[in-house]
Image 1 (cartoon, one colour):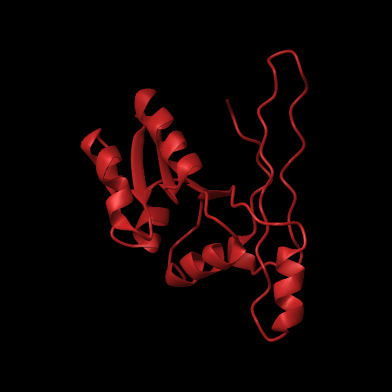
Image 2: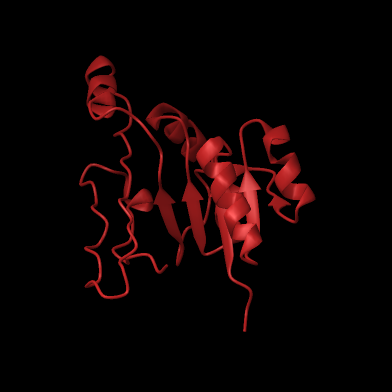
Length: 152
């Protein structure tokens, strides 16, 4: 059986906790952060440090992105613009205020459309499968989330 693998982009409190949990459960973990030193302890525990956001996204079929806000997310995704995402799932768990993207779009109408998070939840064993993550019609096509629910 192949070792499960995941990429974690963004190593704030939530990203670091997720990456550590994946490592503890035997996953091959690739990490990337805008401040590379934030990955040091995870690399010491067995994670692989990606040199760029594109390399991080291409490292595994599943990537979890957890950044401070949509501005940070857009900046990272812009750096990863050439990444090949065919056959990959990118789960966006970035935090922001509900009106944040609309407020930024109103302030800069020529800016690229904002990204929005994909909602993922794990069902209890006795519950029905979750609804697929929502998609955003104005999101650039290459960043549209898949409609596959997560497995726990």
